[in-house]
Length: 148
Image 1 (cartoon, one colour):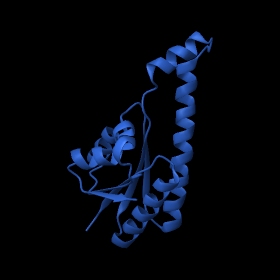
Image 2 (spheres, rainbow, N blue to C red; image 1 turned 180 degrees about the horizontal axis):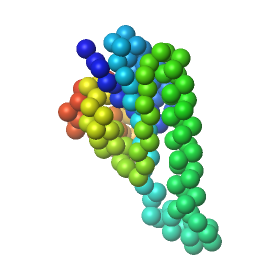
Image 3 (cartoon, helix red, strand yellow; image 1 turned 180 degrees about the vertical axis):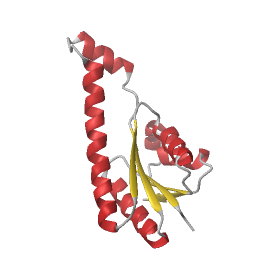
């Protein structure tokens, strides 16, 4: 049924549950997996504040920290995939809106399912924080499995 599954993760405990579920599906269907983590642009206001406070190389430091964080998340996911006996590729997509990055990667990698977590925010929290899962559901042409 599924040949290529994209699993989106931000390294959170909830995303870890989606990763486990996605790997289980991949194992059952003998599907390959691409695990993606997307990091957003650094807010200009924060960047300006760092420069004003005398930080010599804020952009380079930010990019280095983000790359290290993404590598930590993706290597842990790759190790879980190996334990599950699933073929896994990892992708870090920097400087992108998470929902756009997830959809873009799924299309680029020709995935036939996206697996991701949702925190299930409601009401004002959802309005203020948004929902990457809702955006992916609304805009993806690839089927999406949401784990809560």
